Amino acid sequence: MFLPLIGQKYVQVMKTGTDIRFSPSSSSNIITQAKIGNIFELSAEKGDWYEIVMTSGEYRYIKKSDCHKVNYIIELPKSEQICRAVFKALLDAEDKATAEADKRYPVIIGSTEKDIHKNLDFQSILDDKYKLEVFNRFNLQPPLYGKLTLEGAQKKWKF
Image (cartoon, rainbow, N blue to C red; front, side):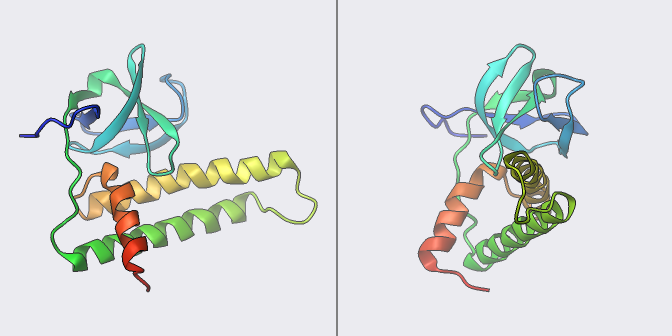
């Protein structure tokens, strides 16, 4: 099914409604839910949890019992049109996350460092949620994010 990629490990979701959490605890805040088949880069194992890397670059957590380890090779879709559509949708998701974070935790002149961190943390959470929705809509895997954004930057895709 998957070819080995030396030095890279991934986990694949095997259970419907699998929660992705802020920290490795069932009482931790839920960031979003993964769907069956989603693949995430594995960073570490922490007890009954996998630490995964999300598109925001943040580490999130998923129960080991809901996943299994897989090897995975990151390949862009063959169609540049699809790549451009996904890239555009990811940019839109990022803008949406930023706008919602700014609305909930405005950063204005006189904002404290704590206020700024609240905004950035919330933006990161929304970024992970909305970008996962984009990958699911296009039936693609989140580890593709880095390669896709690099491709978009190199080709200077504009919208």
